[in-house]
Length: 329
Image 1 (spheres, rainbow, N blue to C red):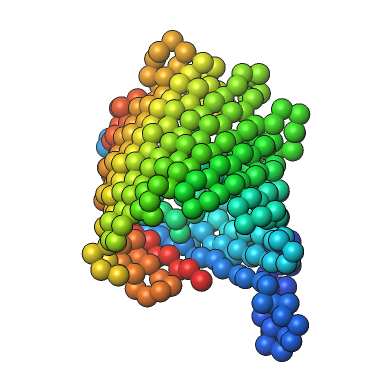
Image 2: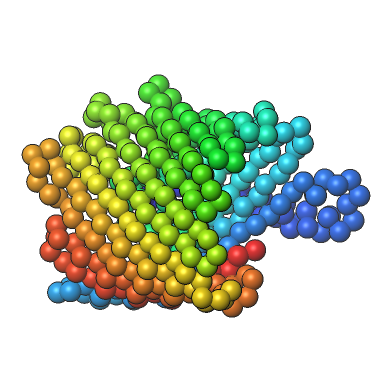
């Protein structure tokens, strides 16, 4: 569910500027470049898909590369810009661009284009415990959005409210009927995180789509556990799958264990289904993922994945294998 804006000339200008900054930084005495931080990643993979009773396919190469730029103006104001290249779209895109103002240590407001807070699984490969996402994010997660968002956070509690043009519309500019995303988070201990999201948007059909996303995680030492449950109404109308008055539910359970500081293993089960207004199941899918990983060094992570999917709605099963090389900087 990618809806990026292609901005190759802007991206090229920014990259050239970064090159100039790195040279100037060697002789900078003003501290200007101390306020600038640049991070990013390069993501490459080999992927093989075998569909029972269907064709098999194999792909390899560069999946994605990204540069994230942050600048601290001082006086509680910061700016953040993410530029990415995706091989699937064959272009350089502006992913995020927003400013953030911290009124206090606990309360801040950001405005521009930013990623939704919702969802247990991250949008970027650097935030995933395995190679692939579940596949149900487009039904239950928000996406990159344009608008304004306020957050209050403390050690044990956080709340956020976002008013955006669309829950999944990074290019949306119509603000006549804004969408809303709300978040409640509780962190009763250092190991436990609980989050709940309620989101609502108006579709082109005039109907309201509502999404509830809840997840919890436990992380202590080498062990990380995660569970998620989501449900939505009318979400499918925007994808022309089930129409108005459709319903969808989905969940996942995941365990990740780090045997050493270099070797880890992730096991995940996920499932979701979509029903039309008359109760007909139009999509029913589940999957099991086994994904070991190996950290070659601080910057290079190798991820291996074997996944088994069953789509009862279409009566097909599929097995896939992947090898991913993820470089971060």
